[in-house]
Amino acid sequence: MKQAKTVRRKGNNVRSLREAMMVSKAELARRAEVSIPTIDRIEKGFPCRMDTKRKVIIALGMSLDERDKVFLD
Image 1 (cartoon, one colour):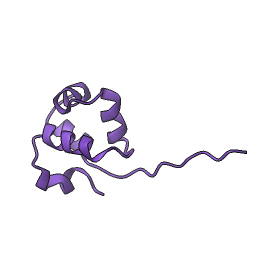
Image 2 (tube, rainbow, N blue to C red):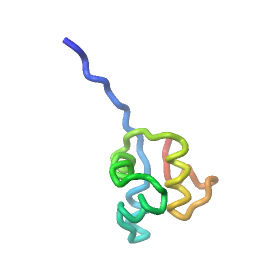
Image 3 (tube, helix red, strand yellow):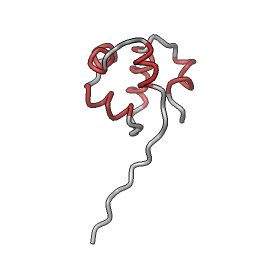
Image 4 (cartoon, rainbow, N blue to C red):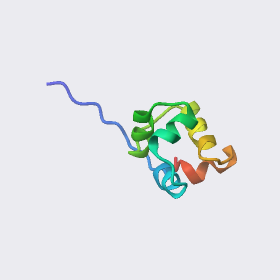
């Protein structure tokens, strides 16, 4: 029997920051130049590439120095 691969979810503040800005997932995805499902997966804590994290941080109007306020890993 084949075992399912376990994906370790990591915490982040993307959803709370997005909602505080009153921005939809679609708008954040547009600003970050990623797909809406990508934003959804990030908000659920699934891992993403470093480049995607950079795009999301900038799309949230934050500097890369503030990355620890967005991604908790």
